[in-house]
Image (cartoon, rainbow, N blue to C red; front, side, top):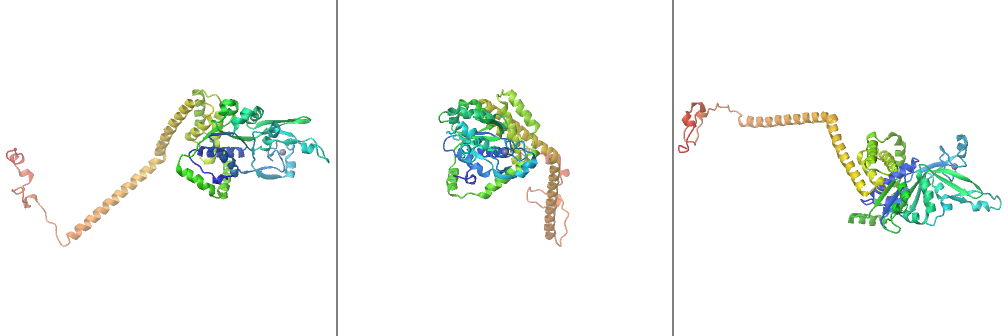
Amino acid sequence: MKRYSQLVRHDGNSCLFDIIDVAILSTYADVPVHIHVEGLRGTGKTTILRASRNIFPKIERIKGCEYNCDPKEPHCPNHKDLPPEEIEKIGVELIDMPFLEISHSAKKGTVVGSIDVGKLLSKNNPQAALLLGTIPRAHRGVIFIDEINRLADTSPEIVDILLDVMGTKPGRIQIEETGLPTVEIPVKVSVWAASNPDEDPGPLENIRRQLSDRFDFVVDVEKPKSIGTVLDILECRQQKENLELEREKVKKFIEARKKLSEFQVPEELKTTLASMYIKYGLESIRGLESILHGIWILSALQGKKPEVKDLAYLVRVALKHRTDSKNLAEILKNLENLNSKNAEVFQRQQIELSGKENIASSKQREKNKNNNNNIDIFRKMFSIFSRALKGKTLRKIESKNVEICAPSKKAVPLRQLDFNDCVKTEDEL
Ligand SMILES: [Zn+2]
């Protein structure tokens, strides 16, 4: 199986890499981000999603807690009521941020939880206990579902569970078993899914629109279009993984999380979004929330204030499944206009603010340069004349003393000429 550092990024998949970065940092910061990747078979979408676990940062949990309790915010039935000193006694441990998969053969019990038959039938100490399912075990991590359109078509029960998990942030999950008290716990799980809309049973939004709307971002992945990229992919198959590159990526997430509070979404971007919602009659406010959240995370990753072009980038993936393509094209066009207008304003401001000083100093530099050039030319001319006239004195030259061959007459000063001498007819000439 390929590792993250062996993947080749190209025009057809680069957006997925960016959105995965946003989803990882957000999950690490305890806010789930749900992504749905659509593409034809062979575009490498599932490979990229699975390999991304190589760049997951580790998380801290209460030692041995299967629910992955955050020591600062315990949520499981065993730890939620414990005082901090008790938790300190139990201790903490670092674990890999979870990445678990839900397969098509999954049942409600395996996804949510069921009675632990092993413990129930224990000879020495039989007890009724819960065996946790995939979702509660993935708390503070990621759940991956391949071919989600097929699952939505065949397992409505699992889809209902996903709707609860993805409906709010954090989501909720209820574990019920006969003879055991019902356990309801909050879950922070990012759901990542992939599907091929061209294969049966078709696009997810046509099967369960409600589930499709739960995804923050829908990303298209396409095949590489250049020979060079295909050659890179072939070469990468033989290349060894670059663990250092993966470690650097993990470090980037850890650093960005520390700086998240330093970033905010500017008011003007919020207003642009709100007016977009009204003007284009967007159905889901969830889409706007996804965009706002995505911009905030993206700006922390990039280490800069978010701009209109970041907004446009996220609008494309956040509204693709929430509005028709004509509407989306118009929204993007408007954002593009706004972006170029902002760029002009920015440029003008730069010239007005810092530019004045720069221009003044550059003008001064230019002037000095010209002066220096002139001085150089004069110096050169002076030295040439000095050499040429060494030992000679300059004669006063008057036009009447100059012997010339043509015209035949001697030259006379202009003021001594008669009017007739100045003006000649064509015949006289
Ligand atoms: Zn716990």
